[in-house]
Image (cartoon, rainbow, N blue to C red):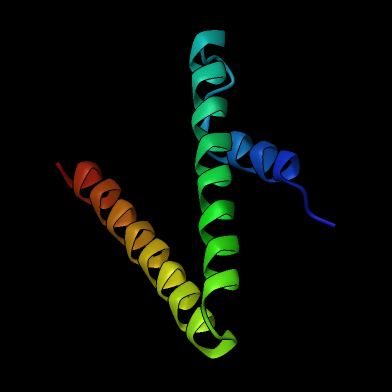
Length: 83
């Protein structure tokens, strides 16, 4: 089973420099866990308040929003590399 901690380590290894100062690592971890907690609360609230088919559509909208953000981030990186 995947845990939030495992997701944190996967994220950490993907985006953090091995030389990052401890304060940066600590603040990034706080932000990661805060975002995870917020998302969990939203999903639980949706699951409790809407019929399953509606909840699925709302949660799918979250996935689409995340995907669009990743594409935007990738494009920004490509634009920086081209400069």
